[in-house]
Length: 71
Image (cartoon, rainbow, N blue to C red; front, top):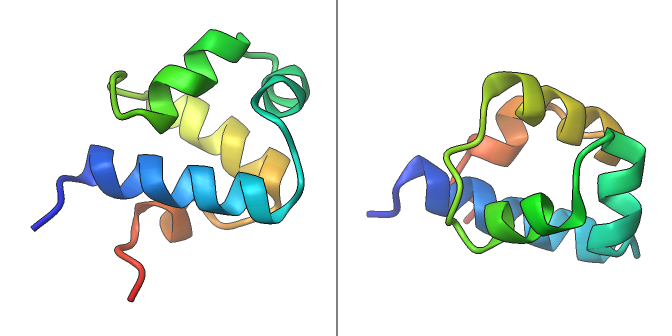
């Protein structure tokens, strides 16, 4: 069973790539640093709810979607 950090990081990377957005572009839209986005995608950061909200809004997906294990 995956942890929420792992689920979030996998979903974030998948959604971002499917949207054709680079880590740098996403970071700019969210007002976050590119290295932070990279660390979140690698599961190295314990992301805050505020940043989940920023990222989900930038990707136009529900925050809950990024936290759900995809089948």
